[in-house]
Image (cartoon, rainbow, N blue to C red; front, side, top):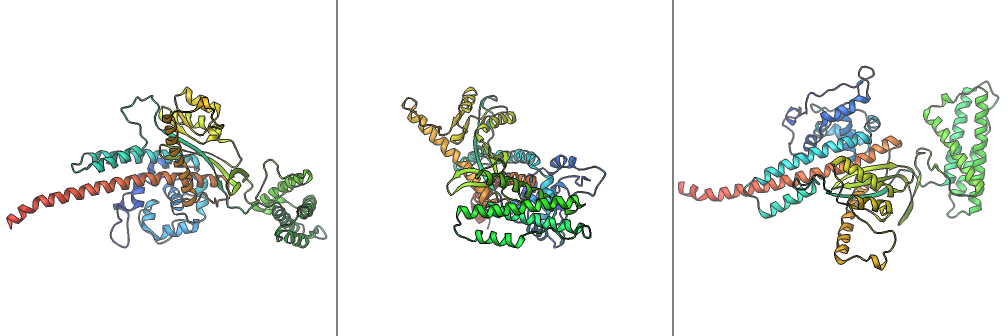
Length: 513
């Protein structure tokens, strides 16, 4: 059940503090609270709940604010709750009416927040927050330009800030192409150990042995003894091979054969125990899920063993995260990565996640789709698209040429002498390549600062939320940076005007004395 708890946007004056005093209106969390349109977004969040049945759910501001705090500060679920409990500013940010010394929710609720707030809702929040932030910056720009004490350097900074907003000037033709779209793809690694087939088989065997133990408890008195498992011998043989620095190929293959035989025998024993009356429903959801995954791992490994191959479709590399697939990237030092492959785009300075998949795909087909989405959102195509060489397909070039879009990227093949560009065209190409490097910085920032270098969540839907939220935080931080720059310019102009007024009034004060 969900109940609307807000009658209006909470102001800083209404926040009750038992310590006395008031919150600083210039604090970053207070400014961020004004930037996000909580009331409008709550209407997108509420429809997924029942209006009458069930326990009341936590409000949207609390759920979304907690996820934002976690991704912005890079902390765990428990640490997020601790920080919110200790800070009145964070409690104001998540919508509490006053400071409370007790945790507003349990750390386990963070998992439910990630399930309820998916990528689609985050994209809606991103669009609304971006529009609201641009409107606030434009209003401040108009206010600053009317001040009398503005210097040439201040006007130059204001023009740079206005350019970073990515808003098409009103003087241009509404239907003409405008703006820059930058495309790229990367892999977001999951938090799993490096997949070794022998270790994966050992974990699968251990899972089947746990299932046999649980099913035997259901058959006490119905069967004479528990089916035999060579758990000690199999584990010792696994340790012998895994501890060797460089085991031979024959030793690894023999160890795999032994583990596969043990898993096969355990699965037959499980079938026999089910025939005798045991029920898999008594295993619990987690153990039953691991049993299904382990049986599929055994099937895949047996097929690769018979074919003496190392490749199979939809290969499982981790029992806890069976959705993770090997992504062959060919990067320096990391030829293969294990995690989600994402396609992102830099839309005039704001980053969007266009595609998330744990199966490898060719991102070359994303250029036309993203350009059409750009037009659907704005009403016109971008003036230029900067992308890597993989996007430079013949279909993409024809599409850009037909819609008068300048596409810049290194060609897939070396140019012949007849296609040699002029000096002006070469300089334009270099400029576009420098512009394309911006998105590489966005990827690096997301991995170093916002946790995209290691995804800790276990489910597909929660991992999607974490990835999308990281780029939302990145966009909000850009808006906050521009607001801080404008505030600094406004303060400097105000101080300068105050200083001039003091200098002009000083002779009159001396005369009066």
